[in-house]
Image (cartoon, rainbow, N blue to C red; front, side, top):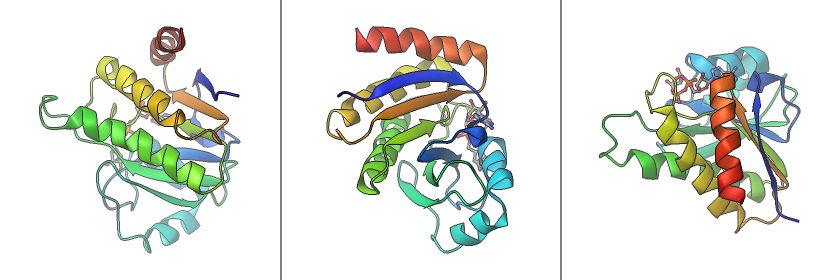
Length: 172
Ligand code: AR6
């Protein structure tokens, strides 16, 4: 069975999935936006665990337990800071989605929720990030048959609508 892809509008910290993805920074030691929300909801054990990870390179991913979150795990990835789109941003953003999915599959996880990585503080234009994210997920899922469900957890109705229409195009 191919994986289900869907877009919802929600606070990612409320989702009971095998893993939620965190749009972190290279230190993995917390920050604002979705990163701050995840650390607040997971509790101080998450930060203590992240201290042992030695950070994370942009485009790579690392996994931790979810601690007090309903999600069993957090997959931390670091999106690119948007400059002008000519500094490798699309490849790095795609790598975040691909590496997070690969790590989920390697860890035996089947359901995963992504925020719209890099589209907040890191300034990636949402209309360019969404097709890049969807293409990367679709390509990677073709290699990872154990993943059952991918949720694009948007933080506005506008973003959810964008993903929904793209999902229709991509899955047509
Ligand atoms: N649930 C789902 N999505 C959310 C939530 C939430 N609770 N909170 C924010 N978003 P951002 P970035 C959306 O800025 O651009 C941090 O300080 C938000 O509306 O969280 O990758 C890190 O430590 C936007 O669509 O991440 C880094 O320093 C998306 O999540 C830096 O920000 C991503 O916005 C990373 O910046």
